[in-house]
Length: 244
Image (cartoon, rainbow, N blue to C red; front, side, top):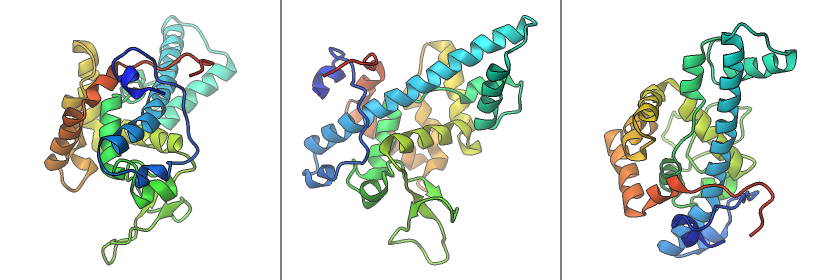
């Protein structure tokens, strides 16, 4: 599909979901060609995950209105709602906290972090394990890849995923549930009330994502600005069943 048309708002992003980060990304020379190919792969995934979250968020709000008006929920709906509270690590009934966590991530923020953590899709972790966001795992049962330069005494691995889409889902869930990103979630809640999400400001909540701290926040902002990634925050996802 034509990424330039999508970026300009002249075409929606397709519902594209590859089973593996393409090896061809690593074969491309570093520069605009690799960057555009990487964005073309990852952007639809971020939009799909945001769509899933938006739909769940709307359904939670509808069920909350029923409960607030004294109604009761069918067993299946109650079970689904309990699952949302459990998934986002929130005590059942605390709707404000759930809605603070059950929320989208601006595509520009996700694209910038994926670019940094995977070298625009060229890293060994991305190619071998669809690891787009450099998430660590210490679980022996979780799939992972051992870093070649891991310091002595460290036991972490880079979490591997069955697909790039699974990696995006895990990344968004991490930002939405981990205590280290409570500040980001609070900023996002305020932004919703004051005019919409702004990835540049939200990046302030990412100091704990990297050992670089504030320098990492600056890097995320630089990547967004230098590559015009904020334009993708206005992109819509193609309707289900659309073809390109």
